[in-house]
Length: 274
Image (cartoon, rainbow, N blue to C red):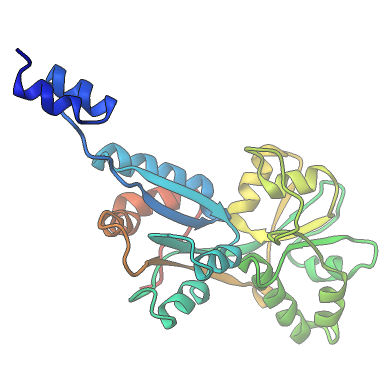
């Protein structure tokens, strides 16, 4: 005679049937947290996610891209639980559209210049070097990538130091990264190290954290701090979106916690302004 338990199992799917017959526990499928983060966060965020998953055993599906492009994807309907942007403006646009409650600053960065080893440049001579017609200046893509917007902010500051510098720099800047049509580096390569290794620019304006990663891949590169009159900082914003996975808020809290902040600090990010 076939037992009642086996009859029930026969009416189920093959996987569940085997579990029922063998007395195996049946686990509900866990939906991962969908995280989208700025490309400049990729290395640090991978460590944060690994530390969080080790504590919580929660699955996180992360993708990294320029913040402006991520914003566009979310606005077009991509299901995202947490958005970690390289500026405050892009997540605030989602709040303004009713897709989240509040943006929290979770890290800060600074812009630096990365230069080829044959370029004679210091912080004091940086502006003159950028303006030199023979020097190729690389940036990311404004609007698509906040790093490009921050580079344009440097150019605006240059105007107060040298008349007509803003227009000259905007005209000559090569938008090499961060745009929808930008060439993609090989997998696991830092895009700025790759751009500089391939001599696409003599000097590239990017985040100081990116500059450090680029120099690790291409040790010959120089990292130049921007002089005070050109210095531009970057505030990073974190948003848990409306209708997010219930597990998203604890991950956001972990990013803001002492443990998450320590990992960000180890990659050169500064703590959020108080």
